[in-house]
Image (cartoon, rainbow, N blue to C red; front, side, top):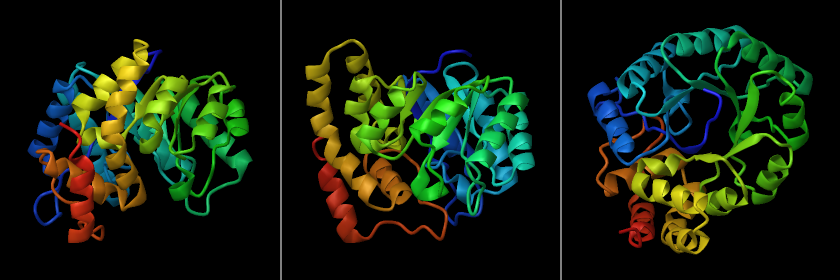
Amino acid sequence: MSNLSGVCVPVCTIFDDNGAQVAEARYLAHVDRMLESGVDIILPCGGTGEFAYLSREEKRRLIEITAKHVDGRAVVIAQTSAIYLQDTLATTRHAIDHGADAVMVLPPYFEGPDERGVISHYEAVAKASSVPVMVYNIPVHSGFDVTPALFEKLLEIDGIEYIKDSTGDLIRIQELLQTGGKIFNGGDPITFPALAAGCVGCVWGSVNFLPDEAVTLYQLVSSGQLNEAASLWRKLVDSQLFVWSHQYNASVKAASRHRGFDVGDCRLPVLPLGETDLSTLHASLASIS
């Protein structure tokens, strides 16, 4: 798998009614809804998949059943981050052994290493991986920013040529594009301009509630139909601004349920949106047919 591109959905993890267990049948049915819409990449255990609220065993199980169920119908990228190196290596090897086409890895987080340590971490992961390693940059949550200058250094590592940047900063996206690496946008409210600027794809949590629209947007931009893409984007942008400015996973799941996708609620302690926020969210979705 040498070229990753297109619409990647970090698929919601679906729990049973009390949040005690992953509802596997409902989860795989949601994966099928994404595949039916033509998404290019399925990503289990991403941020939108609430990986921080999953046990090690749950994460491994989700990767296993996702890759087996997708069975070549789309690319599977497994998010295999962990705080310390050996855990990351073990999770990465497990994902590859069970069919992942690529892995996505955060810098070590929570009082993690300095830049030298981050480079060392990615060197070790890439050396242990037989599939592409996508760098995952979301400094607001990881506490470490993979800057364009650092990404240029990471591009020197064999096996690393991709980054998902979730800063939501279009200037940052354009700086990353100048590195020559392959950039996936991860900031929902800038998806259209980021794709138009040259990103090869998007890792986009909101795809959980707008898979058809996401695929259409990507196809329009890819074919140079920017006026049509801009017209579609105007229908989507209100909802993108909402999810970005509120509790993200609760917002994505609320929007998904409103649009008929069975994703349930987040695992505690993340609570559902309140009634006022729900009303605002629903209003932001009204322009999407």
